[in-house]
Image (cartoon, rainbow, N blue to C red; front, side, top):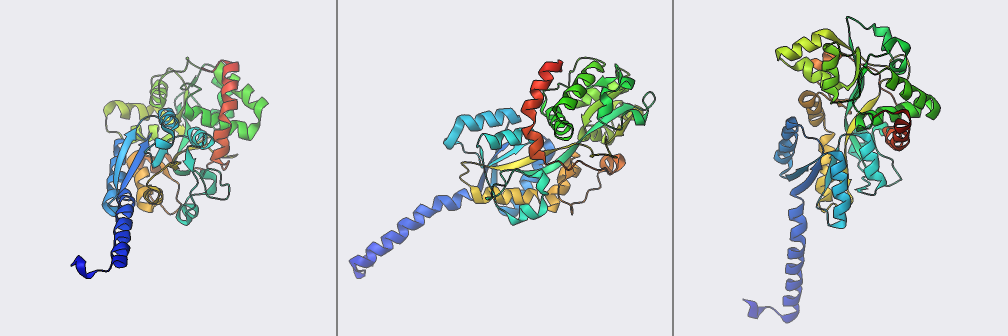
Length: 351
């Protein structure tokens, strides 16, 4: 029937067809999300599959640790396929922001549901990252040997009463860098460095292993108190293994500084990659992570605390540990302090 169409009409029709073909890749891209994740928890699989079921957006995932993902993003540059970055530490989120690896996001959903203290800096175009869950940096102590009043503040980790009693992982681990960055924000450089020196002097052993190893060392009598993220203890509390039950029977947990500035919390956070090709899907994924259902899964699936006030969890370990007051210092400032903290650690010999 083409012989019935005038030449101008054929030209206009051709232009429309070309436009439709040109827009097709953009439509297809909205059905795919490329995720770079430092969250290596099997329990997160349900988060991803639920998002795909609800939206039809398929997730391609690459997993590595925080530092590895940031290095990969820098190396890939504008050619990076990443749409969303999930990291598990405030210092790493801050580093990615400073290196220009993220892009600002303006979303009323995220801004209403996620507290400002748990978001990246907003330069007027939106925050570059958003905290999606928190974990408290708590003290686990031998309840047969250590008095609760000896461990009710972080300051007391450097007190004479705990000489030879402290177990802690490497000072340069991001979880500790963020805690120390929080102390620096609260107490200033001189007091913080003196405190770090006191912690080193009180160590029961040289730093080694992860947070669970520190808890087990307390139960074994190797030390009197350990510094750990709350979800490591929660895993042991929820475990039915006899060896784990034996550990938790010997220890107790303290949320430090409840009468003062509150307990330090760190975040797992999400950002949209600077060169994201599927930006609409990326923002939709971040908004999904801030939903009550996803927030509840962070708590029930991985023993983390939701950041959204309306989210509820019946996780028995979190219930057993109880409610606590968390610090209010902006988590972005904590991340920014870690470079200065690392210099202090080198000076005091905190490996």
